[in-house]
Length: 173
Image 1 (cartoon, one colour):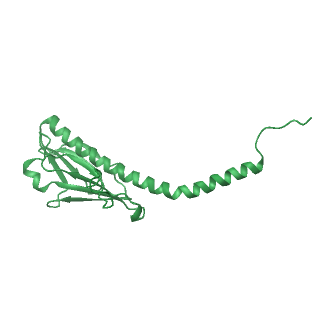
Image 2 (cartoon, rainbow, N blue to C red):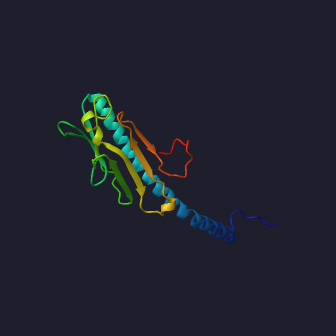
């Protein structure tokens, strides 16, 4: 009587490894695009959270609070009058992410009043929008993001500046 040994043959293992290798080769390029677009979204969310935090601090303290985009990347929140820094984020600094600031007079900050709206003396010069894009992947695979700051309420909204979205899509800017 023959006793059957359980397990895999070397041929079955080699075929399995070959299939896994082929699938990995097919998925890897798309995974890098996904990672790059995820990094872009993380940076955009960091700026959005910073703007919302500045607005909340202004309401909590009933004082003008400044949200400022730093030249080196990242942002900081500080008291408008004394300049004391409340919060700073430099973790969003990354050479593979490009961002631009659109404002009335080239300003790189927003000042919130104690009511959470844009502070009246600074409204005309406030940041209108932040555009955030990855620079490490092909342009046709990038998902650029835009943060818009409504004037005078100061509310922050993240949207997609893509023209391929239908007109009524809430993600469209």
